[in-house]
Length: 365
Image (cartoon, rainbow, N blue to C red; front, side, top):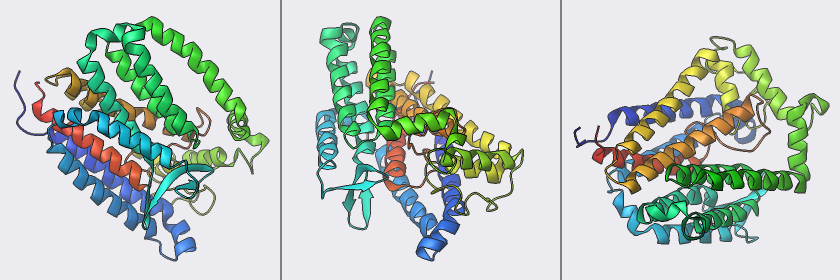
């Protein structure tokens, strides 16, 4: 085996490809809506280009910072992220969008604290597990306290409320704890508890119940709760093998609400077809495979857990987003990494990949 002196260039190429495709698809998906609302078809495309530039600069900077540095500030990072999550709940500070108080305005832009906590909590857990590896098998000393922390952060997110982001947070953190050596029996208990809790969360909010019923049969309310998924399927179906061609989507003409956001994969399938959608899925799969490979060959436990945790988190988000778009699960309001419009999501995802790239500099293949 040899130690890499340089970053994994194949991973970097895949990231650049996904970001580039995202910019092109955001412009195509949003051009009609942006023309109507802002009288500028390039409005969202230009902003996505700006977000991508900021994110790629952040990725470059972070990729040059030794990943061990994040261990030294794991506590501080987590505390700051929790404070931001608490601030967003304060009326007048947090901005309400789509029925959730999930944003904090910063000048002409806004940030989504939930995106920060997803990465901050992974850094903290990777540090704790690496430091106390032998305690993870014990519930009281190891697994239990970490579990309480994850549920505490999940609770803050649910106060917004944002079930989709909360599920990504919990899923990625539990995966990290699982690969760290936590006992299976603890996860069986959690599965039962989680199923009961998820059922309770759905039952406690009428709009979530509506989403579930719309998922079961969207045609019961085609102009209401079932509208998004029906229009999404109307976009995917006509795409066929080769698609209608870039820029030729019909669903972006005010049929699919905000097609440049959560349902951008519908426009991808409509314009680029099955082949284009499969290529993008292949890029995501390669990113997962390469990230796990880097993590498995990292020189220490912290680097290994952090790299794998980051790519697992991104992959879970991809799986949930595309499952919603093709009608496999109810609507959750989760963006598609690298492709969906948004500053916080894209910038934080790229910064997180910068950490994985830095781990690759020290990995042994």
